[in-house]
Length: 412
Image (cartoon, rainbow, N blue to C red; front, side, top):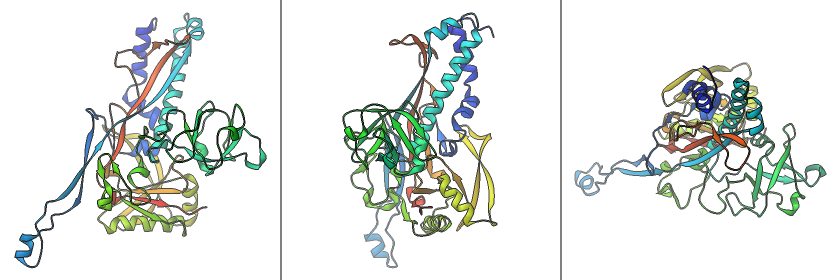
């Protein structure tokens, strides 16, 4: 293809980011995003997720009592609403102009930037799928080991996977609470020790130990959540109050799933007990996600008795044959369960899931180029650059929370 103008650049990007190529860019190394069942037709104001939480109770050994006590099936609809997430790819005007004589050079520069933006957005979506929707990434410990006023440690070291250089961060005292005034920009990340360095004045001028940290724009800020309501939202650690997508869930735990504190045992014991709790109420879990640190401990627990498997990614069209994740299997009450390591799963939690009860519902592809006007490359209105806008529009739904278990994991 002769690439001589923006129209042809757009056509080239359309080919580069076709459905299959888009999946390869966004799903690899992100097991939750990759493996969740998907639908891409989330139009309208909301999507009803029907949950049946009680059978008719007109039953008795005495006919007159059965007739007198007849009731309807207990059913409620979660009215799932969309959230949005954005990432911008940009190439400077000077780079664009300097490559006019070499069209492929500009295309390669643009593709590198788009791939990076897609990775950034896909990482954010993956992290949000495990969390409660408040937008928080971790809690913090300021000045670990007296490293200086611009360093904080993530309270759970594995949370360091959520931080990147140049992120703009905000903080709050409570998860989802009102954010403190001011921001800090990440200048360095020490992934071995869980340390984040930021620019600006000392952190003590803005935040304190135990604060929750967010990327700017993600925080609920004392109001409604603007991030995906992930597994932790659907499977809270205690009986929830208020409403969730329009449903008062405290009526029956079939509407908010199960929580098991397995922190006192081994990783294998925690997962095996959790899956049995699901089976006890009619569930048949088939997948469990945990952090790599817990996965390593499970391999040690099962040493010499491991069964491994490969589990494929899916799109709304079906299985993706060339993207898969290695699992170690534990034997459950109703069959084997594939345990898969996920870097952005909080290390203190695991999620034992019946996968066909979940749906990642989106408006179009989960991670896509925003081009409703037909243009994938835009001239920036505020800078000497050209940009491509990447977006996510959707949310996570569950039609049977009770078959799924949020597990508190042992410290290892």
